[in-house]
Amino acid sequence: MDYDLNESQTMLKKTARDFLSQECPKSLVKQMAKDDRGYPSELWHKMANLGWLGLVFPEKYGGSGGNLLDLLVLCEEMGRACTPGPFFSTVILGGMAILEAADEPHKKALLPGIIDGSVLATLALIEPNGGQFGYDINLEAVANSDGYIINGSKIFVPDAHIANYIVCATRSDKGTTLFLINARQPGIKITVLKTLADDKQSEVVFNNVNLSKNDVLGAAGKGEEPLRRVLDKAAIAKCAEMVGGAQHVLEMTVDYVKQRVQFGRAVGAFQAVQHHCANMVVYVDTSRLLTYRAGWMLSEGIPCHKEVAMAKAWISDAYRKVTILGHQCIGGVGFMEDHDLPLYSKRAKSAEIAFGDAEFNREVVATEMKL
Image (tube, rainbow, N blue to C red; front, side):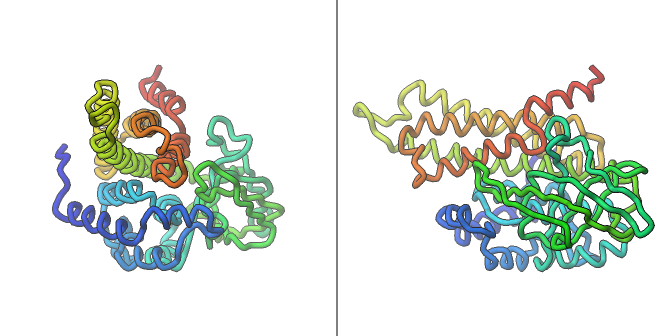
């Protein structure tokens, strides 16, 4: 595999870096953490105008026809900037679920709106009693003469409070079934949860929600395979976000220890601090290599469930460790909310458990090894 970015990816990386540094300062990120919606509409529409929302969607729906590696380049820059907003939930979770599972009429009706920024979507997967990380689907879709009715709840649904549509994973008499649900439909109650990273996760409660057969994405009982593909892509996209965040923490820390003087010399001159920074480099570079290897395999259609789990297992630990080492090197000021470092340490903890933490993904790797 060639790990170098091609010309278009290099341009995308530079454009994203320049745009986010100007349009998404940390002051805005901190402001949006306290905002009810969680993102500024102006930033969202500017991202849409840049073509970011349609990056991985086919041209026939209005997208750019890019591949997953292109998306990872963008996600790394967004993770570096702690970009607020529903990009991950709408493009990667909701949008890709529609692309992977839906029939052509659903794709033509929904994907152009996602691409131009007028439609927000998300994926409801995790359940309170759904086993480890809620991946066991127990929310039942009961068939009736008119279609289906669902009762129950999903938790940690990203950006559900602002979504127009929710792709909901259910268990029907035919197996795993994905539904496209209008988020404002009667019988749905959405409650934003208080989280460490203020990342707008919600509980979604369904109370006698009636759905028609036209609300099924694809075919009833055929949702497991497209859902697995979406989750693999989402997990590796989350890894790319984490790599971008970890890279920025590394740079922030190295700059600080070169300038901060204690006992007559720069803090970076002390061996303990040097070793901390060296460990951070190791964590960041290995994380990037694992992420882009798995991303390349996914984009090429090569089976890589194990490689995705390996990347997520490693980076779940690595990003958290990088932020801890950053706190140790920077010291007390790095724990203050006015400093940027807490933004990253909070996101590291949140991202650590998204799509399974290190322990969960090590189990996946062991299973793929048939142990």
